[in-house]
Length: 82
Image (cartoon, rainbow, N blue to C red; front, side, top):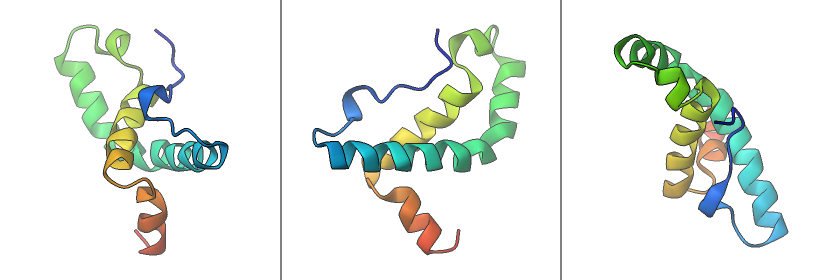
């Protein structure tokens, strides 16, 4: 399993929107590192958890879920000062 998150079926069609999505996802992965304790907890509780999903992929999944809700989710957070 790759340690690099993929964009998968959520990647928009236009080049401009792809770049915006990539920017948002990159921001999201960095911000979602706040869930480090949850990742560590799951590693302790689930056998081979790191083989199932890497830490970076874990954060990317959280970020992608937020981006499905709002494609500018992390810009909104930043503008709100959160």
